[in-house]
Image (cartoon, rainbow, N blue to C red; front, side, top):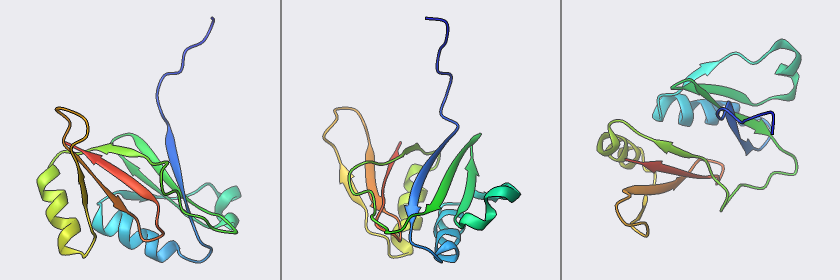
Length: 120
């Protein structure tokens, strides 16, 4: 084989049309991701892009909208307990999961119902 996959450049989650402000409040405001400007050619499609640790998360508009309840991105976190506290203080319900021995993690749903995983 003459190729190899190097890394994930970005993941995308979906949101309903017109909800970019809510995406910004959650992904930038609560999770602390940096919003990055979308390329000019893609701005008309709506959505918002965020960056963290050299990767990106794209929130794309999907119509009809259907959240990802099972499929999800997983984020390894520095300040894991602080993130849990921040999410709780913002009224976001956490679901602890100890099903994998030695792995500390929890799940939340973003404001659109997309599942997100956070690992220590």
